Structure formats: structure tokens, C-alpha cells
Image: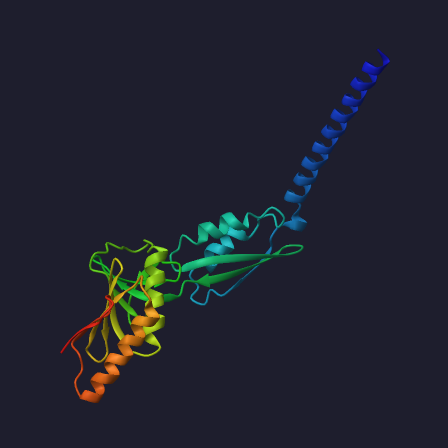
Length: 234
């Protein structure tokens, strides 16, 4: 019997201790969350050179609890603006937050059936394309619209082709349909590549063909490098 009483007493003390800890944590949370000392009174915005979301950041941040400020949720909300890639927040006690704004930057200009859009590295069509100096890509089968996202395969294939080709040739336009890539060089030659194949081998073959054509004094109209043996027409 004394042993049972001891166990009940131990459980009672454990429950009491947990209750006191819970109450203390709640009171601490209330004090810290409501304390004017930890309210955000200063907001510094960096990187928003075009003043796109500075006002919205100020509204979202000022007056919040520095300790319990929901940085991830606010950043996600602000990034609904397609021009914004992300917003990072840094807390400085007792009451300051620094917001660093990162704009999307174009890596491609993509023509679809609905229009031409700037594409960021993560594949988002975030703005209509203008006179930006970025590679021009066309996909006649695409229904891409503003706010849509290209797949990582599409972006990866495009950038890989441009990296392989662009170091040696000037690309005016590029069209992608599945794994077939059609490139219009500044010389006027149309080049067909296998975007999923060995790009290094294909580019080397292209260089060899164009070098030989230059010696002969005539440029090919088309060069098809999708097969084991290139097909060239003049």
C-alpha cells in the first residue's frame, strides 16, 4: 500500500510540475509577444530599387512581435508578386527588422502561343518580354502564360544548349519541341540538335562543318546533327 501511495504522489508531483511549466511558458509567451520592447518599430528595406513592395513590407512588418514574427509566411505572401523571387528577413533586437528583396532575373525570353515572356532561372514566366538582352527562344507548341512555370527539363535543356553553342556561335533564336532543338545562327544557318544527346559532340561537329564550309566559300542552309551522321544542305 505505501508503495502505491508513493507512485500516486510521484505522478501528482509530475503533473503539477508539467502544469507549472506550461503556465510559465504561456505567461512568458504573452509577456514577450505583447511587450512594447520587442515590437518592430524600425524596418529597413534593401534591394527594392524599384520600390515595388517596400510599402507592403512596411505594412506587413511594422508593429509585429520581433520574436514571433512569421518571416516565412510573410516572405511567401510577398513573393506572390511575380517580379519578386524572395524576401529575406533579419531580426535585430530589440525592435528592428531588415528586409532584403531579391528580384527575378531573366535567363531567357520565351515565345509561346499566348505571347513572349521573360523566364527566370527557376522557370517562372514573370513579365512580358521587351528589349532585354537575353537569348530568344520559341516553342510553337507551348501555351505558356504569365505566371506559369516551365519544367526544369525545359529550362535545363535550353540553358545547356545555349552554354554549349553560345561559346562558339551567335544564336539568334532557338525553338524547342520535345528533345528536338532548332537554332537559327547569326550566319543564317538553321541547326537541328538533339537536346537530350551529347551536346559537346554535336557542337564540335557543327564547328567542323562550318569551318570546312568557310574554306569552300559557301555556308550551309541547314545542318541536322540529331543523327550519327550529320545531314547538311546548301
